[in-house]
Image (tube, rainbow, N blue to C red; front, side, top):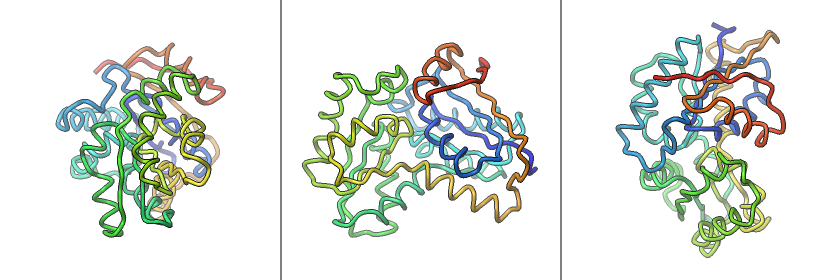
Length: 264
């Protein structure tokens, strides 16, 4: 089991922000990554539909021999983490609880901003996790439906991106939050734009880091850490493999892996 891979999946390439942290904090672990491009965006969809995707994708990754799975998508975490934990006996990590925990420990003025997909905002999943930890904190949220497609197109710092960001960030900026949760794994790729608009005094919380720290703790407890260096990476998409490779190179700077097309 130690030699088995970590499964990671997202509606698209946002989960690469989680992969970056995984490779940094658990450098010996192999990766099986699935991007559900054929059915994105997840944000406007119904909970039951997304939950079904989550279960189907984890089944697929289990066939690839994973020992743990990260739902590297806030929307999928909100919709399907609970059901996935009931159905599967491997460790399954979402990104919402670790992100909420990081935000609670970061804020000084008690005002936390959340930007996310429409589904994640409406699910109140972050609100519930934050209030569990500290009911006195104030959460100001703003849905950002255009951010995910912007990242998927690799248009990270265009004038249009700045215009959408100014519109989406207005409520949290006016509320004078001192901490802002990047509540979608695509959003760390827009970090410069978001920071330019919010100002350097606002701390941006990327839940990916805390998610991997949580995973590392679980693997240590279960004696599942891979200590060998013969790691591997495999990538899959339900969309266009060539397009995925092209945008992956923009987001990561380099991407030397083949992408396999998967049809459910």
